[in-house]
Length: 120
Image 1: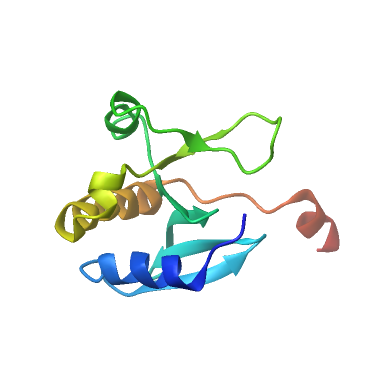
Image 2: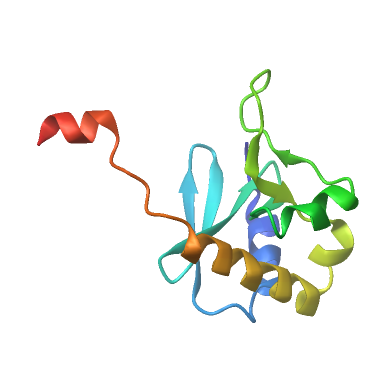
């Protein structure tokens, strides 16, 4: 799931219209946040945006793949690959990313893991 510095820089440049985007390396990939809202994943120099039932059809219609971080395991249908045309158009990418931030912000908070609950 390597992410090259040049691809990460390019994506961050394209997302300049999204407020306060930060990148955090995780599990060989990169997570993108707007403020504290997790809205995208970069893996293998591919950008995946967070989706919900309303936004997913746009990606499916363009035959974009869901994020599949583990070969042979089911994909994570909460994130879909961004079409190249959208990635290359900063204004359109900003629009799609802002929708993904809204999806992330509206998601219910994740419960603590079992391990974290046991430590309490």
